[in-house]
Length: 554
Image (tube, rainbow, N blue to C red; front, top):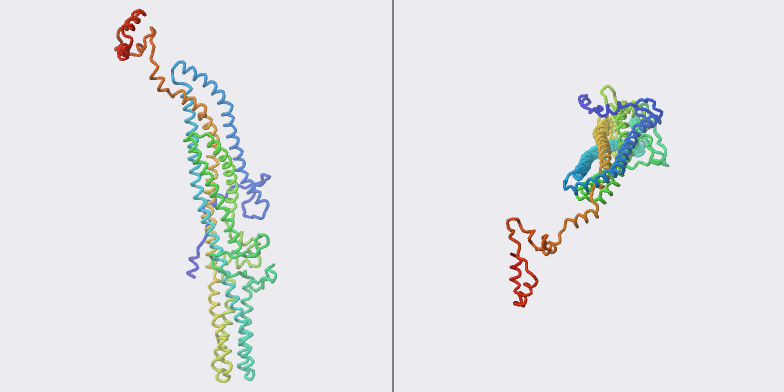
């Protein structure tokens, strides 16, 4: 009883209670209750209404982006024409201020808005990776617990089947031989027949714990008992491997199979985890290349990232809708999971509510529904052991030929008692209840937390991509085109040969005079008449070039 006090318990978390308290409306805008009934069309309508909130948010985002695009296309066209006129006036007045500075401030503002939006997107991506990991951890704990419970049930069935087959073997073999040998001795024959009757009683009692399938693999045929608590017969496998339980068309089998549930959840979780990783990588690539395009002022790269940002925006709002419906449905289930399991036909088909309540709650107030069956089986096995001990003491000295058969029956009885003790331990509620609580904690704690972080990621990334799509058109439109860059490079470049070979000519035709500083200016060189130049040339037909350079330098 002291061990029962340490049974782990489950209590809904704060986030589960908050999400469960959200108001629910169907498609006719009628308030509905928040009971978890996934098969009900009214409950499915409430989830559709909550998912449609993300569609409304997507429409609002599109309207905001459209208004910014209209602003850039219409308003900035007039500003560009006015700005070009002001720029020409500024160049004529040599002021250097005005539209150019306003344009620079506008470009800087748009760029920083884009950078802030990309930063917000990167934060959302980090939140998304953490949430995806938490959700995966929760689903892993859930599937591991289901597999452990499936292994326990399979072990129970294996022990029961081995015990039944062993007892039937003893009835058909050694006990029948002993009856033939003790035909002439009535007391020994009565003891042998009592062993047969008790063995058949044990087989009948333990058969009520199994649920055998018919030959064509269709419906489950279960034998009823006073407790009404059959357990599904499963193939024993290690807890790390998910068994493949045949089901028609992927529909949940009846009764519920933990192995089938674990196998289905693992496959779906792999696809979910991979889908979110690809979505997060897409967002990360878009953000990184947007920063690269802003740094390099690559217009074509920003245009390409704008197209991918549109795709990421739709995926973010769509994933938010799915996550909202999933979070609300999980919170409804996690608020009172025992009630759903007890009332669901998938779980209680062929199993009494007393058995389910015993394993779901594992309360000290409840006695095991198998207690009477186990007690009767234990008494029958003890009686068989007593009869065999009496035959060993009294009959073997008189009938030595019965020793071999008696030893075989004792060996089968010892193996049956060992299996029976293991069966009693496995039928205790602590093991299966611990698996049940662990599965609830994996789904309702880690899984719920991961879904909330994924919802936050989708919301933040949707806001970030909305801001990016509003600011990117203004950013790449403000970048200079290739023709403008070519004209600027032509205007700023200088020809070194022209600048050094072309002298400055003064107003009076003398080279180099106006280019000299005021302090270095001298009186203009004397003018020479043509006759003087002619005489100079006649007196010196080959003038000295150095002399001419000295003359010009003066």
